[in-house]
Length: 460
Ligand SMILES: Cc1cc2nc3c(=O)[nH]c(=O)nc-3n(C[C@H](O)[C@H](O)[C@H](O)COP(=O)(O)OP(=O)(O)OC[C@H]3O[C@@H](n4cnc5c(N)ncnc54)[C@H](O)[C@@H]3O)c2cc1C
Image 1: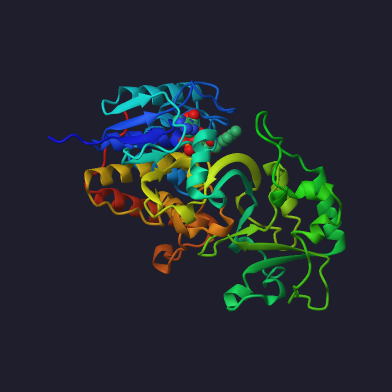
Image 2: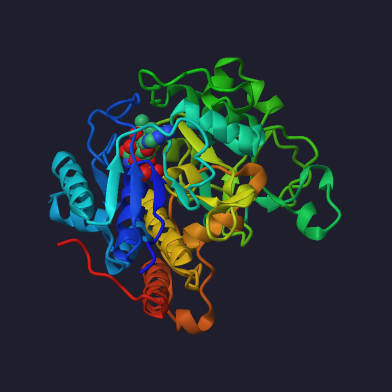
């Protein structure tokens, strides 16, 4: 029998461990490279694999009406190691799945160490992987070591690898009040109707503007952690820092009121205008342009709902600025998560521009399987965008706008809209969410059963 060449996986975090587990369970040997404890990061505290660096929560476990819960469900169905260990070490947390982080990491480490097809090398890959590693998954996370990050920077170009995220809040388009907001690009620029109406505009009078500024200044903010550089770039200053520079700064920056006419009140010139721009091609999500912020989540939603038109806004994700190494995946990766410029390198986890423990693990799950199928020479279809994992894959490999790409959590705004046959008369928020999850579950199951090598059992 010919020996199967191993897949090299760099990074033994949430994505790397899941990828190793999935590939090895399909019969492909894996060498997992983890730099800790030889090389540390500012956030990791242990030498365990799959260490949770901050909160111990996998967030909502509701697979009927929450996109994160649905992601849990899909990973469980696919025999995911991270979910099975998360379930084993869950601690009470209401509707959320929280885990005992030390026991969780210890058991993920033990399962990986015990797997006959996985070898762990405790070494840093301090540059591009050698050319003779013909299949590599890079899953080095938000704190990718500088030596590897710089090598990737050389390979992909400066525009394509970021070291910070600067996330502006993202709202569900359907929750914007169109009796106050309107579609228009500044000075009606653009060749097509779509371009001329690319932005959603929310007008503010002077009193509302001043009240908004006061609320921004008073809101609770998150501080950078020790070791995290606090020198954010001039181009992506948090809005509250802009306000500290002067009360007119926002009116000269992201809230400029020029080149726009409010069709609801054509005779009244707005004092300031907040603009929202499409976040995904299907137009279900809009980001608030230039509104990256360090406001804490609770304060943030309250302050942003002061914007006329956003009083009832629902947020697919709130804003933030963090240390985070991530690729411009929509530009760089093909639909199977391989670097277009060097297809032997596949990426997984947070470095691909998903955000969160479970999102990262889920991209590891998919990357591990895709790499293994490729290694075995079998054709495997991709999961469709109606599933949670497929929706994330679709977003990072083309659904998102490459020009403005920032990391993303899973949410229903990434899924194709419900068609009448799926909706089957279901109305109201709860029923619609249920329609999304029902469709996703059916499609995930049929994807799993369509795979050439079938499903593998979860960890014992
Ligand atoms: C400070 C901080 C706080 C966070 N808090 C949360 C939170 O509360 N909730 C949440 O859901 N997400 C949080 N995140 C995001 C979180 O890191 C990711 O969701 C998740 O851990 C990413 O999984 P990953 O596998 O992509 O990366 P990681 O889990 O970070 O794993 C990457 C692994 O690669 C190793 N590595 C790096 N470079 C190399 C190299 N060159 N060679 C070999 N090994 C290497 C690292 O040591 C690490 O073990 C936080 C991130 C940071 C930085």
